[in-house]
Length: 306
Figure 1: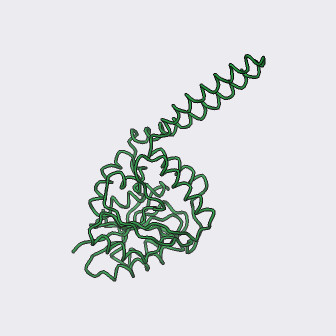
Figure 2: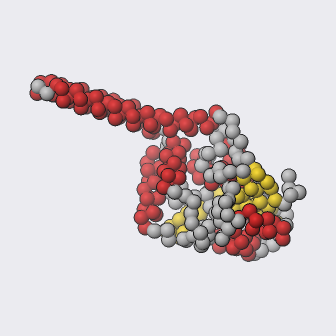
Figure 3: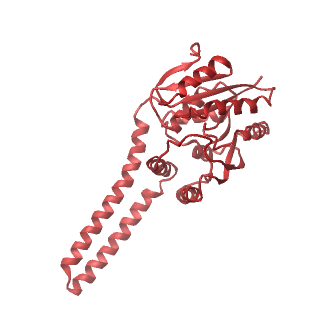
């Protein structure tokens, strides 16, 4: 009998964990031909999430849980959850109910059709027009800079075949922060997309801040493209030409002092901008060469799970 793992990452989701467990269980009971497990990965929550998970694990043998030592972020914890999955397929779903558990049957049926991945793609969101528009702008920028096709409004919510899981595990041992949604496009997996309307959070408050979104955006841009480095070269060449022309014109116009000040300020601004982009790429390289554990686990539940 094949087995499906449902991976649920959470951080301070005490008001949603029980409801998500019940919703996922209800969907999986529709597929008696498959064995299943529900694997929670908690990112060192500071509320009562751990205690709730412990109670669920004690009463349901289908449920396991990993409690991390610290908050390692959604990408690293989600990958660790996938690495520890025992299933022939892995369904990734967040714990906040913004992505509907009702799509699980469609994911499974798509996987049964032979697709390597079946992913949810947002056609709209209840989170607010401004926020959704900013996300659309982000995807447009990624698409423009990317050196290949990318998936828009796809967060990773969906089902992954064991073959995809093994490939991602092999790749991500070199950089745990690599984003699966971009890797699966680069390596040519067979992907089926299912449209859905993203809901508001069922309860609680998101732990994502503006700074988190900004870091994520810059990091993902550096992962999908080398174009910013090429643009630095072209921008430097173009700026040098502009400064040279400005100096010649100002010299013959008799305003050398102002022209020199303008040239110096412009050169400084260009250098700072270019150093910032180079620094982002150096940070990506540093993560790849620094051998750090993906996460450090505080405990696993049940206690006999090794």
